[in-house]
Amino acid sequence: DASSELGIPLTSVYDTLVYQDLDGSFVPGLAERWEVSQEGKTYTFHLRRDVTFHDGTRFDAEAVKFNLDRIANPEMRSRKARGMLGPYSHTEVVDDFLVKIHFHEPYAPFLDSLSQVYLGMASPAAVQKWGAEYQMHQVGTGPFIFKEYVPNDRLTLVRNPDYAWAPTVYKHSGPAYLEEILFRFYVDPAVRALALESGEAHVMGELPPKDAARLEEHPDFALFRVAIPGQPLQFFLNTQNPPTDDPLVRQALLHATDQQEIVDTIFQGYSPPASGPLSAATQGYSDLVETLFPYDLGQAGTLLDQAGWTDLDDNGIREKDGKPLALRGYLMSWGHLPEIGQLLQAQLREAGVDLQTELVAFPAAVEAAGQGLHHLAPMTFSGSDPSLLGTTYLSSNAEGGFNWSKVRDPEIDRLLKEGLAQLDPTERTELYAAVQARIMDLSLVLPVRDYVNLNAASASVRGLRYDRRGWFPWLYDTYIEE
Image 1 (cartoon, rainbow, N blue to C red):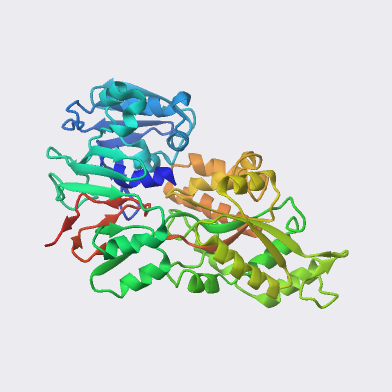
Image 2: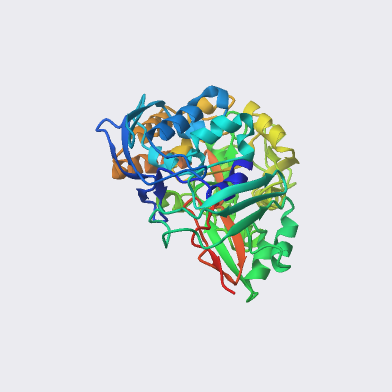
């Protein structure tokens, strides 16, 4: 996705008010410390006083207000960043280095949002100078300076010699080790490993499993398996379209799916099988979902018998009222979905289910699922806060949104709303555990695999790590060992 693609280099250009460490805790960034009001609607940030943008202008409270108001402005059409601001009201500048951010309602995920590059701090002077051309002239406060961007080809960063405000998520202080970083965009997954092996690239991301397996055996390369938090690769089960409107049928599909075979066959064991609506790397993940729907063909058959689906003519497909148990699934070309679809077809046929798949472009798949034409619709969402479940399970998103199970459940709505406002970490975890249990109790989703980003680097690359969300490399500590 375009925002993730550009987020990879821009993580080194922009600093954020807070950072999320790899253990999930939030630590100071451009803000030295912060307080949250008792009712959860006001966040107060005490800013560092020693920070300058790459253009020499000062970072201060006015810069924070400028950035957040700009993102909140509907004319900016920054859907991803705007969504991360939640019920944002306004930013109040108290003094040069003290800022209060106000919300219409309590908003627990705000620190998570603030720690992401999408809410990184840009130079107000540069934004005003370049206007619509700012994308080509980006200015932050980070360890690297934006030098050149040629869309679909390359992006070049150079070291910020004045960088002296590194957060504690990094391992050293002062300027970065690397003098220059050249990012190239490789659209074809097949050539990514070749670029690494030929020496054209030092680091490569999103490798196909077969290439990762080959590189892992080679002493000249190191493989990085980075677990991605968020929602796993999953198939949403349409609760409004017969026969998946029947909970017994949905439960049978879950028992008839062998996720372990899928991850072993298609992903060569690099991805763990998924068990619920959140991946295991996500804050608030509940492991109670792991034992709910084990692969059990016998149980799948029993459930389908109870639902009235039987194979009367012995052709391997169950029928009811003269109609075969046929399901429609729309697949996209990404994420190995065509291969997953084939294997899932074979697995479900063992239970007497005829899964008919159609390979379509992403916009067509979104439109079909939005209209509810599907029985199964695949999707994955990355994100480190469990509130992202609202995208796919709130009743308000059942029409025109990504609630592709089409569920309208007051209990899920209540839990998700409370989770968004609950600031106590323990109580918040309990709320999201209840959401996950409810989603699986209603068998709204068929989880397939937790996403693992397979990255590789030349053995000479040292100090490379990836952020909590798994997509973006921390290149500040990285160096090349000659």
